[in-house]
Length: 179
View: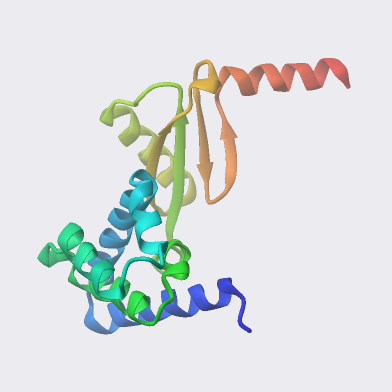
């Protein structure tokens, strides 16, 4: 039996290959980002997709209804393929794996900025320009609000943490004092 990671990876690679062959992988990437956001924000949709009480046709129709915009045709077809093969359990991971493969293939940094408040677009643009100049790569930025930071920001660049938060500074001082 294949591990779920291998199955999800196989689907993600197939979607990326499809996009590269059609020359529209950036559009598919945008659709994948959109779907990930929807699945993160609308828990009921994930529950609906995973619920065996609903038929494949009902699920396919609901996805088409929700995401049936012309610009998302490839991702709707991809999701319907997974549903018809009863592979809905791999959907979420496949989307994330596709996202990571696309970023790597296109030499784009995955950047998450955590802040105690929403950030002004100008601030995000300045952070993006700084990171881009430091690493010599384009950035895919996601901003997350994290009230636990007290103040400041935490930036994750391809999984590496750059901590400019008050909480992080205090933790650093504590470690110096203790040992």
